[in-house]
Image 1 (cartoon, rainbow, N blue to C red):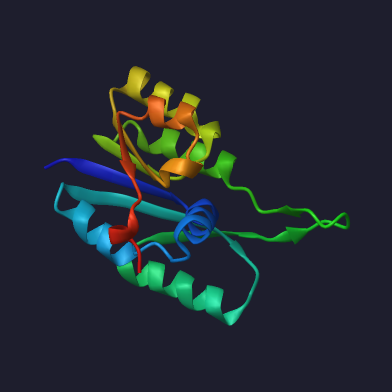
Image 2 (cartoon, rainbow, N blue to C red):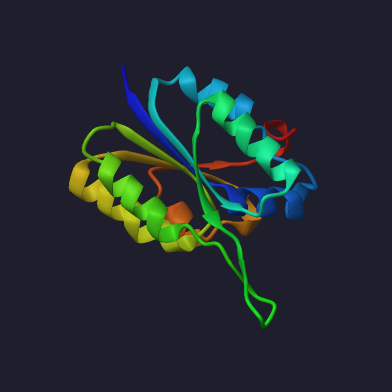
Amino acid sequence: MKKIALFVDVQNIYYTTRDTYGRAFNYRKFWSNISTQGEIVSAIAYATHRGDDKQIKFQDALRHIGFNVKLKPFIQRSDGSAKGDWDVGITIDILDSATSVDSIILLSGDGDFDLLLDKVSQDYGVHTEVYGVPQLTANSLIKSAGMFHAITEDMLL
């Protein structure tokens, strides 16, 4: 049975589905679909922690589905900008998993991950897939993925 690792850039998926469709991604349906393709041996959702009740309930729901939720504090800078980026953490975890899985599935539209997907595909022979909102997913990420899946309205709540 194919071994699958899932990695979710929660903020990226939240904002791209909200901005494009005005709706949230259906993580339960996604999990159900992926689990028919093989064994999900690792599933990590990367989010920021602001401490509000709605966000805590959402994170608990992700855990209930089967995700390990990693949280980073949300930092609001004095100039109004914010920081809560998980790119390095996601990269480390994907590299760590590349030797023990057949397929890596990344939910993100962030083009910063294109070189990472190229590396795990070329150096480890791992099949890579990306799920993202087409209009808001970097072309370089789409091209680097072994397979790109457009997040469409049927994948939303």
